[in-house]
Length: 134
Length: 89
Image (cartoon, rainbow over all chains, first blue to last red; front, side):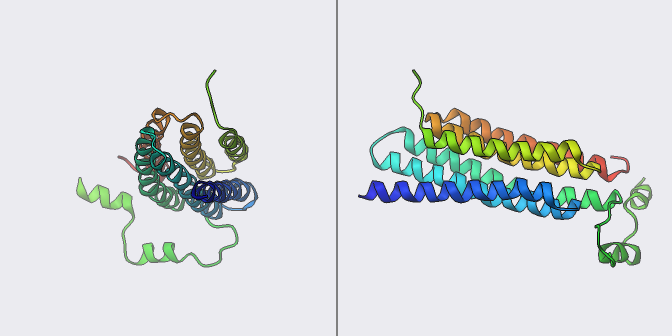
């Protein structure tokens, strides 16, 4: 009875994860802009990967509970993969967005660019700052 | 005969469709940051599909490959973003 409930939880987690990964691909095709595509392609894959690795963690815990020695190793290594995804994915998205804005790509329907105005007022351009250092 | 579990193979096929949709964006993207967003999405989907592959064949070594792939793709994404940003580095 307990094994059946755990199996149903694993399947629900797999369905949620695949659905959000599919949403990521669909939004990457349909959105009009770099920033909106980044919004779709990064958040949805992070959320879906959390659920997919979570289902594999639950599978490993179930195998460990049923007496298999491989189950605990499976669960712990999958938790390591989950921590790696959680640390690296938002950082990479932030770096891509910053590089896109500094390389001159504007949002499609935007009228006011607040970040650009703030950079002009307060902070010097990054190239000038590096020249001062030399 | 290697034993495997059918439900995880179905999930792998669904993730393959997501990778194909991202490859279309990488090919068609009008600017360079569009292509990099597609590449980053492909990297994350490949990590989760490697975890699913390890669960389908009950092998832990694929999950270790997934961890190393996550860290290396993170470094490559950071360097491509740094290259796009311009300036000297």
